[in-house]
Structures are given as C-alpha cells and as structure tokens.
Image 1: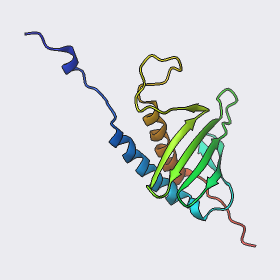
Image 2 (image 1 turned 90 degrees about the horizontal axis):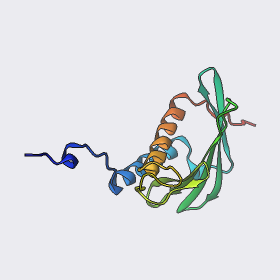
Image 3 (image 1 turned 30 degrees about the vertical axis):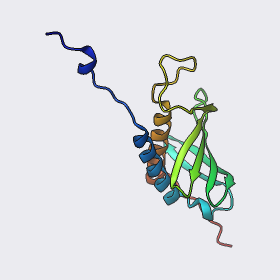
Image 4 (image 1 turned 135 degrees about the horizontal axis):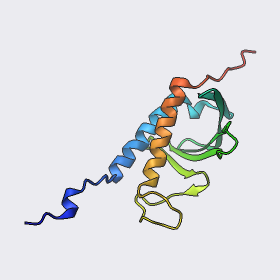
Length: 151
C-alpha cells in the first residue's frame, strides 16, 4: 500500500483563531508597556542591540476611545540595514492590537499563495504579529525607560 504524501507531511497552518489570540496577547503587552489612552505625546526609548543601541519612537497618529493608530519606528545603528517601521491599529473595545503595515507593505490575507510577486511568506501577517509580540517582550525586559520631567 502506498502512503499518501500529503498525510505524511506536517503542516503548520495558522488559523484565524490563532491570529486573533496573538492580537489579544499583543494588546495586553502593548497596554502594559504604554497605556495609550493616557498618553498625550510620542514615546521615545532605547533598546540595546549588541554593543550599540537602537532608538525606538512610537508615534500616536490617531487616538480615540475605540481605535488608536500607532507607528513604531526603529532606527538601526548598522548603516546597511534598513530602518524598521510598523503601523499598529489598537482596537480598545475589542482589546486587540494588529500590525497593519510593516516597512511600507500592507498585508490583508491570512495566507498567501507562494511564490508571489512580493515574495511574502505564506503566513506573512502572522509573522509580523509574532514579531510585534517578541519586540514588546524584549522592550519590556531590556528597554531603557522613558524619563518623565518632574518639573
């Protein structure tokens, strides 16, 4: 009897429920680090990367009771590596945080056909949100805090 090749391969399929769970985790991490509803201006801090530091700037582009739009910008100290920019939508009523753009690219679909003209991975949207989750964890553990003016 010949085994079906499809049944022997393990598939790493991310479902919509997995993605929404990741949005929920990102929301909790983001609100814990940066209480967006209470902020009035942009946030700047530094994270160590090897012997150098990278500056992180979070701009609050739109802030409302239900939805906020943030832009996270990370400058690289290595001149040949591009700076990183993420556009994050925070849905306060649903308690979700979603990466909508990553370095100027927008991703709508949960899964992509591969190969594709933009050379996006099959689960690009999931990868962007995993990166945000890991970035927020790293920032909480190693980020140098914002100093508030006491005067």
